[in-house]
Image (cartoon, rainbow, N blue to C red; front, side, top):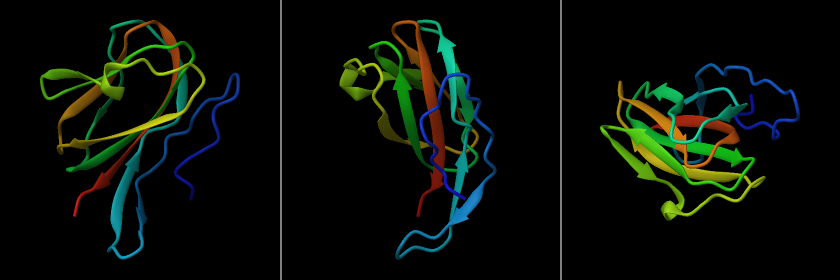
Length: 126
């Protein structure tokens, strides 16, 4: 089952993906949990795409925005800008990785209202 899908087309709706086991080269089975890939209109400085880490690990964020804007990660009592605080260009796909802790909640924010397409994958560490 592929974890990545083609970029959404107009009117496309993502489907939630169940946890799967993958075997990366040279590693034991590794749990991967993924959110659905969706495109939604988001207001500036408002939390969206909330998720709770199912286990300790590394999250990979796949994201594209319709309008150039900054993107921030909200979690563990802080808000941190991604991309060194620089704006993401419109209609470009970006990936970011960050550590997550089991049971902790995280979300995203954009600095300018935009339609955001994103998916979050959480891999176990170790």
